[in-house]
Image 1: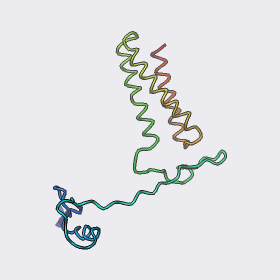
Image 2 (image 1 turned 60 degrees about the vertical axis):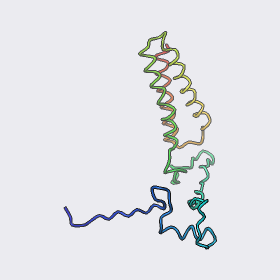
Image 3 (image 1 turned 180 degrees about the vertical axis):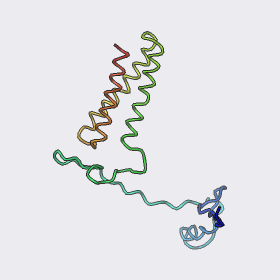
Image 4 (image 1 turned 30 degrees about the vertical axis):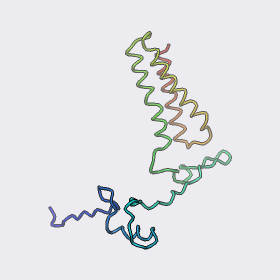
Amino acid sequence: MSDKSLKVTDRRMFTPDGELREEFRQLEEKSSGGAGEESPAEPARRPELPPRPVEPPPRQTGSRQTGPLAGEKPARADGPGFMDLIGLLAEPVSIYLREAQAAGPAAGAQSLEMARLHIDLLMVLQDKTEGNLSFEEKAMLEDVVSRLRSGYVGLRG
């Protein structure tokens, strides 16, 4: 092992009790007019953060697609994306199809209808995003819809 020690510094603004830490008191004094007096009736407020800049959605010009394939970064690289939405809508379909297969033709009708509803939602998404998707997004959505539809048709008959 090495002889270096690890130092952990708590840089949070508030204590676990919700009180403003001493090193951040000057922010509160500046926002209250610099008087330095704390009002016992008003709890310490967190400073407001500036709004996050919103990037415009990718535009399509002619037959050339812009967006992640054209070297631009995705609109929200830190959060869920379109692929996550596809997965969210597709996941229940496989569950409903398994339930319908296990229950048999007569008892699995409700599970088949729920599977059909989710497949229809994916098809609506496919129709409404036509021309606005990157190549990978379009290919994944088409693949997921076709696989789920064939699984549904295989059980429905």
